[in-house]
Length: 120
Image (cartoon, rainbow, N blue to C red; front, side, top):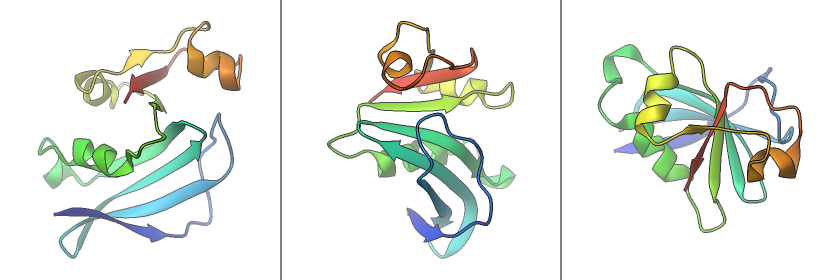
């Protein structure tokens, strides 16, 4: 069973929606198999960093992590998509954020074109 165990870090990646970063180790039973960093503001979670160890990829664990983050208030997940992660996010229905989109206009006009959004 996948679970999240809160942890602390000395550094964090930049976020476009805030600075209250949350860090978690991704656990499968009692074994650490990855990590997660995100920022939550209002009805949005920005996935700042998500990592699953190579031997556990393509087993639905990333999707399970996102399910653990959902709650009644969350309407959107946003994330910066890299070449390596684009396939994963696209399989989950992520779409590029445009200037006129809700998330962009609500928080900043300076989103770079590589940000994507999933409506929960």
